[in-house]
Image (tube, rainbow, N blue to C red):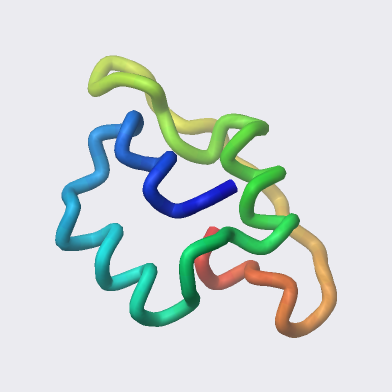
Length: 64
């Protein structure tokens, strides 16, 4: 998943640009899986669920 696809979650462009500068154009597999599992709400009335993420070092947990 490319970072620009996160715009549909109403994430400000300045945030997307900062993430892009820090980690590149694409999310890591763990990050993509977390988003698809509901990490980001689809609208302002939805609350993201709590997620427990267990993964090796450098898998992308901090981004999640």
